[in-house]
Image 1 (tube, one colour):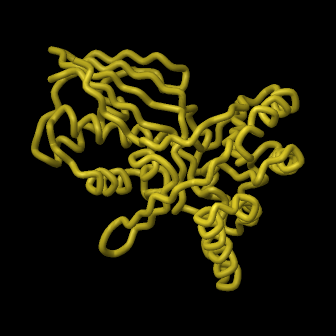
Image 2 (cartoon, rainbow, N blue to C red):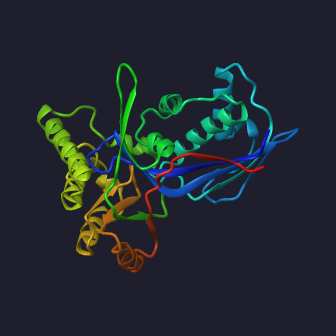
Image 3 (cartoon, helix red, strand yellow):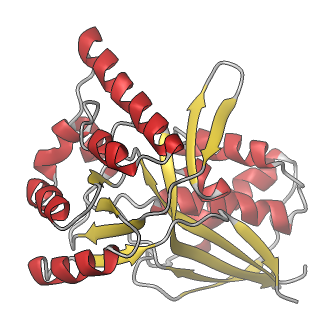
Length: 298
C-alpha cells in the first residue's frame, strides 16, 4: 500500500431555511495519514477527537471495514495518524467528515474505485441525509435531496463573502436539537418556509447577498424552535447585523452560529465578537471548494 493522506472539510448544514438540503464546506479539516502496517496502530493529535480505546470501536475504522465488507474485502491493518480542526457536537459536520473519511479510507486501501455518486449514496445512508456529507465530499455550496431514484445534488457557486463562526464551549447533541422540532407543519407554514428557501437560492444564484442575508434569517423550519437551546442566539444575530453582516444562521443544528459578511469585513466582526464573547471561539473561515481530497505520500 502506497502511503496516502485523506483530508475532509468541515461542513455547515441548512444555511437558514435550506433545512436538511443545503450545506457548505468550510476550511476546518479532518486529516488522516495512512500507511501499511503488520498490526493496527492509531495515533490521534487533536482535542477534538474522541479518545482511542480500541481499534474495533474506532468510528472511522468501523465505517471503512463496513464498506470493504460490502465489496467482499477484508480491510487490512494500517498505521493511521489522525488530526482534526473540527469540534465535536458543535454543528460543523464532525460526524459527516468521519463518515466521508471512512468511505475514502476503504476506497483507497482496498482499491474499490467507488464513483463520487456511490460515495455520496453510502455516506447519505450512514448519515441519514446528504446536507453535510455532500459538501464534505464535493466542496463548496451544495443543495441536495433524496428522491425515489437517486440522490440529486447541485453545486451552486457562492458569491464572495467572509464567513464568521461563533463556537461556544458547550456542545449540543443533534438528537436534542431534533427533539425541539415539531412532528408536522401546517400547510401554510410549510409553503411559506419553502418559498423563503427558494428565494434564498435564487438570491445566491444572482449574487444578491443582501437579499440572501435577509432570507437566511427568515427560516420557519427549524431555527425558531431551536433558538431557545442556543446561548446568545438573538444577541449574536442582532450584533452581527449591526457590525455589517449580511445575515447570521445556526450552523447545522447548532450551537455554533455563522455569519456571512462582505469580503474584507470579517476581520473587524471577529475582533468585535472576541471582546463581546470571550468564552467563544470566534473565527474567520473560508469556503472550501475541494471537498474530500486524497493525496499519495510515497
